[in-house]
Length: 362
Image 1 (tube, rainbow, N blue to C red):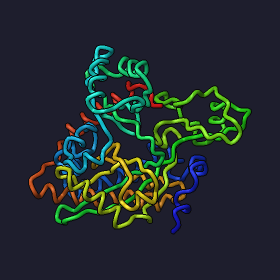
Image 2 (image 1 turned 90 degrees about the vertical axis):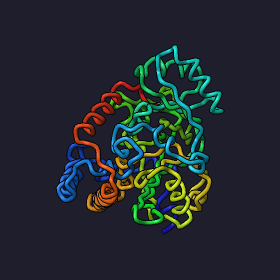
Image 3 (image 1 turned 90 degrees about the horizontal axis):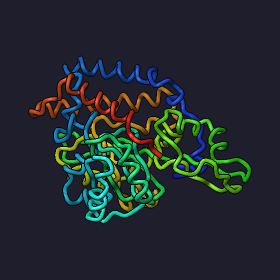
Image 4 (image 1 turned 180 degrees about the vertical axis):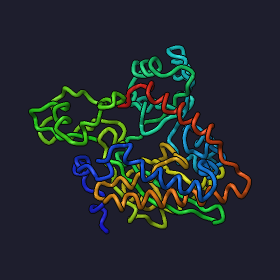
């Protein structure tokens, strides 16, 4: 299969149609997933068993864990492949000096990415360009919570590399590659960015939930043919497009990701979100930078490829959940107990409470 069959030009990808899985209401979308999860819970005698898959992380990375936890369990090799990162515990404007010192010590300068330590789906992630932007972020971010500050990686390519390793095996494998395409509009010299977004069935999502906004001036009128990126994040909730590139998995990329995962403490299931220079380099296992890692709770997001039928999409999701339980069962047999349902519920409630009060993503 050719690269361009999976990864069309950026403009084409950004204006792709809405897939069948995306068309379903969120609650309806979840019913088959929850049904299978309940069946697996009965089969394995635990609804929270997947929290045992990555025992060094809070809930195994199912929910409520901090992004900094993943960096904390990395060895030297994995850390060298990760974007420069620091953090500050927010106390409002009084944290500004601490944040600047932390950035200086980490070798980070503007523009930066500021995001919540406990987050999900890009909520609260903002591109911060200057001191004024950082002060604003500190002012509106919840007090007492940690803010992650990262160098902004300018590489346009972004991928999610989904990894699994059976604890009984010496090496793991990739079960999927997701390519993210950022929301953007193409100027016609007449209409504003806002008007162009309003005419796009995907881009109308940006700002609809009240928790996101464009990263550009929506009143500007782009020149004919001018491409304007309208969001820093590529989530489908703001109009981004997901493309499945799983058929392009190579031994070189698999070996590179396995080396990263094996350099993390008891890490068996998760997704490495990376920025890459070129798809060719990525498939050779080089030229990429880790910007974030997610654990047992990370979705098999390559299933959201617009071209997939519902049957194909759910087939990917069901296999991921089945394999997740199987791996966690082996970790439980080694003495790693899953978290209690009450603890998992508390973590879920805290995470979703925070999401509602984070600054708008851009």
